[in-house]
Length: 122
Image 1 (cartoon, helix red, strand yellow):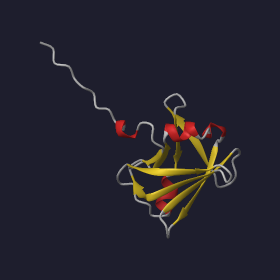
Image 2: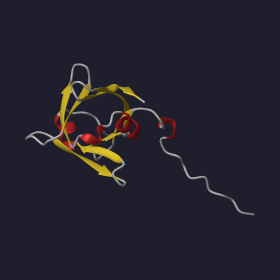
Image 3: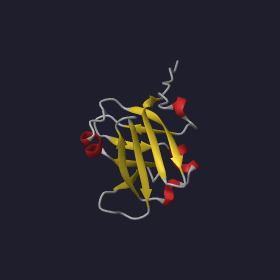
Image 4: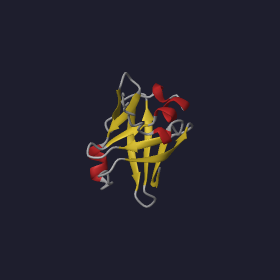
């Protein structure tokens, strides 16, 4: 008799939700695919990062061109998973990334801003 192995389905509970994940150890900010697609964020190539310490909120200003303080938006898995290599930013602001956590996210089209509430863990 064959015993079939059921491969684990990671993030199945997040399918279709808009979120951002900050990964442990590497400190990458991974932009969820649904959020990315719903807001047509593929038009942006660079991101400037800011932090509101009083409210524990990361703000990402998306840009078309690179300035002196922007991070490049990188892609993995055939341009399907956008992320920002943000370890130095997280370290500078003492933002904990010892565990991988997903957070709800908001998009402001007029300001081209992504807002991540670090208190809102999914």
